[in-house]
Amino acid sequence: MELPTSVADDIEQNEDISRVVKVNAIYEGNNVRERVLLTDINGNDVQLTLFDQSPEYDLVENQWYLFQSASGNIYQGQKELRPNFGDLSIEPIDPPKDLLSNVEENENESSTADGADGNLALDIETIQTVEEGELDLDNPNHLELLCIGVGYQPSSDGPIETDVLFREGSSTAAELDLIESLCDWLETREATTLLTYNGEFDLGHIQARAELASQATKQRDGKTVQRVEKLFSQLTHNDLKRPGLSLETVADVPETYWDIYNHNIDPTDWRRTQKELGNFDEDRPLDDPVISGSDIPYFGQEFLTSTKGSPKYRALYEMIYRYAISDVEPLFDL
Image 1 (spheres, rainbow, N blue to C red):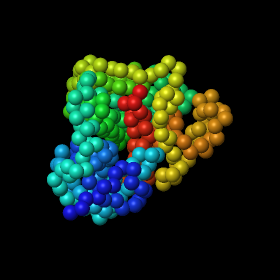
Image 2: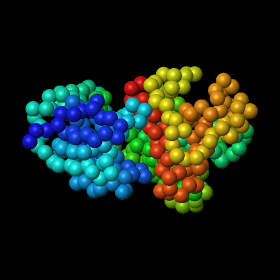
Image 3: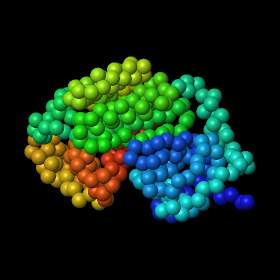
Image 4: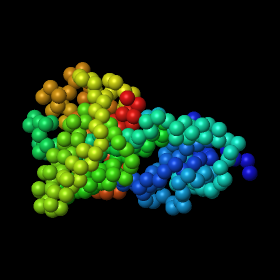
């Protein structure tokens, strides 16, 4: 059987594609069934996302497969595969040795690389509990956790896994569940270093919200707080922040646009308030389609109160997911 030789560069939006790929890892996603990290014959890493309604595929890590009739998805330069409304067929194959020179070289370099200790990364997104004019970013009572972008790279040349852990509902218990999900995610990956950008805020806020949520729920006897403290103490924190510079200034952070999603939310109202308070660039149009960090609390509140599975929920989920991922992936390049 003649195998296809298409690689990541050949992926086009909504176009069918057949590829030979190796399954590197399979992860249970947050709000999705699975995220499958694949490597093609040229050593390129591509992700396959499977939602609850996607067909079931019997995939095994470190096995090579022939993917036929997958569908391409490109968002802000990132290329992915989709199951193509169920048309994707997957067949296990023997390692195609005549096509694997690049992959074998990459794997050998990765396995012999010096300093192969894994790196974790995280970045939080929040919702506000007070009006814009009352907001104090240093007060953990004013900001609750919405979601946490996470990333993992087992070695300096290894594949990068990313995900976004979402809070499921507006309750305090849901926020505490999110923090425990973060602990689960970090604890199940072998790493020595935690990467952040301005992470003193992120780590401090996670710990503070764990304490406040534990007290409010009157449950679990502070076990979540102890778990967070232990976890963060075991990792070497590498804060990559450059004084006075945003992440967008020092790294290639892809922009996320609110106006391409079908959520029927217009941010100009809260942006007008932000501009009146001096918290919005005077030269920036209120209807600028690029999402800022100050937009996320408002979009996030709408997400938490929307009906799960509704078009609005799905649009906000995808939009916030993309925004959160964009603040995590660049950390591995800094």
